[in-house]
Image (cartoon, rainbow, N blue to C red; front, side, top):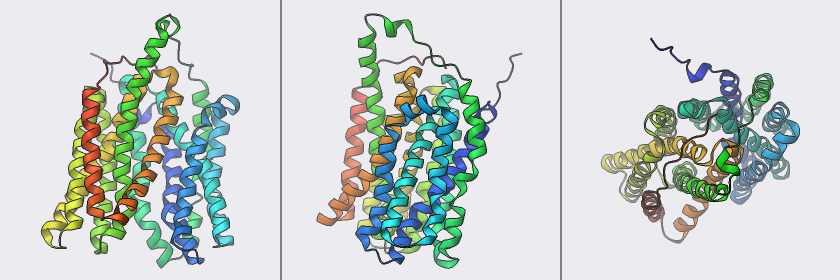
Length: 402
């Protein structure tokens, strides 16, 4: 009789990681829609209020580039604590002023914190969990990210307008509450042995193996960029391109809810069957979803076109969550454990850049033509990338031992 392995939820280090992640993303999700709204209340125009989250993501990506050396210099616990404090404490400082300069400065600080937490979080999963169970662990980690977003992104503006911004900014300090969990997690990660250097990495053919691994990582990141462009476009423009507010809310709930569920479910599926084989099918699902959104937005606001639109949003949500999981699992496997921190940086930067790029591209095309045309373009791009992933399939990579 074989001994049953413990659930990934209870592996050493995972509980504090999941609690820290949930609290960190709670603070992020609360301020994502409310900080620009606060700027608008202070008199900022559309460009100024849009600049708040633009600067937040720019600061996030810039910070992600320096997290790896920061970990080597400061260690896990210090980096995690700095990240949580930068993400959480600025929330209450919004109450001092609703003027744009202060809000933009606080967005930069929050971006620093968010950049640290996102890279450290995915790197921690790779460090704590063996490759054969990493898909499930990434699924659990993804659920800790997605549930706060699913609940709080729609709720935060309602709370700000009906109860008051002060409540949201008070709740936004949630990341700072996670500091004790970060310290516990940091102590655990400090005991994890550094990945061993494989003999092939130091042999003469090591450079060729490194090149193969680099190529193998590229396509998952390209697939991630593609789906985050599509998902980010829906998250950004649903309230703008849909005249019916209820339809917009349901579409967002379909995307974020199924995204959370899909990211969790695909963890076990990737562990059992391998992650790479699901990238192409999920991109096709994303293309069908984008086409459905295009038809729904272009048509009349009757029951049929509304249903097509919501099904399209659900398809995008399924691909959005599933691809977040399988692309990260595949990138870790392709690069090997020695490069897990670099993969974490590249993957998180790709996610954030894709989200911003989707907003810019769709906004530009919609201004020149229409929103339906924008989503047709996204559907075509998804099909092209799906074909490339299928045609440029690398040889299977064997995950390194954790």
